[in-house]
Figure (tube, helix red, strand yellow):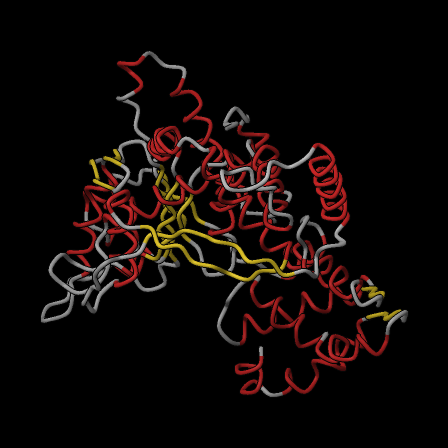
Amino acid sequence: MDISLTPRQTVEELDKYIIGQNKAKRAVAIALRNRWRRQRLSEELRDEVLPKNIIMIGPTGVGKTEIARRLARLVQAPFLKIEASKFTEVGYVGRDVDSIVRDLTEIGINMVKSEMSEQVKEKAAAMAEDRLLDVLLPPIRTSPGFETPTTEQEEQHSTTREKLRHQLREGKLDNRTVELETKEKVMPFGIVSNVGLEEIEMNLKDMLGGLLPEKSRRRKLKVPDALRVLVQEEAAKLIDMDKVTREALARVEQSGIVFLDEIDKIAGRETHGPDVSREGVQRDLLPIVEGSTVTTKYGPVRTDHILFIAAGAFHVSKPSDLIPELQGRFPIRVELDSLGKAEFVRILTEPQNALIKQQVALLATENVTLRFAQDAIEEIAAIAAQVNERTENIGARRLHTIMERLLDEISFDAPEKQGSMVDINAAYVRERMEDVLKSEDLSRYIL
């Protein structure tokens, strides 16, 4: 895991996907670098340095979630995005806050497991190929009661097997169906519950592990699917799960990132009555954010050094409406800017995953060449900014709805127009969007 990027390098990497919002990028880049600095401290001091959690304040669609998600992907850290409004006070029906850490641990386990699967992929593929060839051409029996195969028979069997191996690698056997025997754990009893039924059953399967009986199941699969199943089985045998668990727990504790969205929904004046109180949810979140030990099925996880990035629009409430203890655990406040026409033009063209690039690539699969004139891009950006002002401001997400509306006809007719070239200019954009923009009521529903 590489967290040795300097703050400047981190911002440059984020710039490839997110336009503007330099204050927020700088804040997360510094938080990331502080983790790297902490790893180089003496052991006594290392435990004393706590992460500087961040609150991002800004309307929807300006890049809050994307900044946190790209940051986690950049350093291959376990990352969980969760809405604060999902949680409820202890004693009410709903998710308890400990599930944040359990979910993050599960993500960490899957991440390390997939990394280790990649390391043993070649060996697992070779073993899976041999198992599949045994199904396609069963080995010669040599048990008592059967004639001992002659050297000629063995040579013939070996030659046939190598021919099959060659055909398998060239894809000539892809249409053949084979019968595989797979094993899976079965629950010898059912569970009657109205909450989290699948989760309870999965947790019990993991806890009881080797105690549960294995049930063999015969499945008919096409050769490529059978090979995929066998590769997974062989990779699972080669992976040391104790090592996976140790590595994953260390990664979650030292570099885990939790993105708490809609934090503003649990801030505000205290409500009285039978409803779940917002302050109650904040008090339940507090131990996790300030550092506690949560028991998971893989072992205890300390949350002291997990980085929490909270975000909210704060239209009605303010960060100061959070309880003082929780405010103190989020020392860094960053305000994100609203997006206008200039930013929309850049969003449409500059990032590596820019909307224009996506649409051009999608239609290229149908052999249709799509070309956007600069005046068309500026017109799309102007319309997005105008609709955001007139109706609800949903930031850059408005571009998605406008692009879908704009390319609706082209996308529908693309299979019949293979080999053609479509030029989109400002006049075409105005023509397609004219009806919707005339009626404010219509634009509320369509855009």
